Length: 201
Image (cartoon, rainbow, N blue to C red; front, side, top):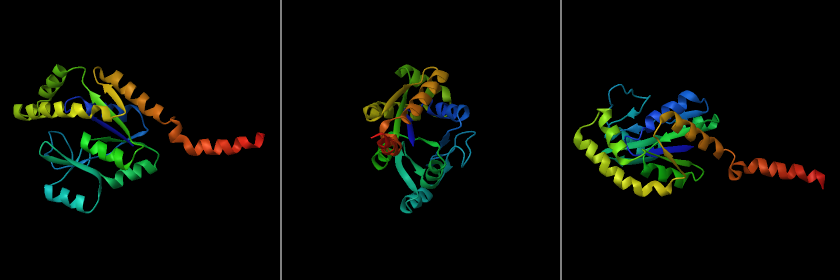
């Protein structure tokens, strides 16, 4: 399980879409949210769009691995889909914000946390304005939130600078794949090998 976080406007969605398109070993966890759909977004594909009442019922029923509030809306990760895809051997991507990421890491310490940033602050502002989906007031809120979010960066495992998207995709994939070879993630294999090697005594 891996979390991709970053400031609004860093291109997290573009990065995740490119990973899913280019490689077949990833599955994206679809988050639930109380925010309104943006143009072109479909329920069950981009998000599960919920009312506040529906979302609060999901919290009560423990249907979420994590949830958090971000700029006046709830966001959360439904449990069933994540568990199903992990059982299928997929690397499950959670594109969530920092509060949720740290809750996931606390519950599941093996989770890999990646933080996506723009090359500089001006690029971030330009990308937010370029989306054309938010009012100047919301953009201002997101930029103020980004200042706070810089404090979380050191809690993540890897930093990914999204300057050129193709290069960013390759680097992100390489980071994720290298994690599969960490000794701690291969303890069962090492133990079997240790037993097997005893025949040479």
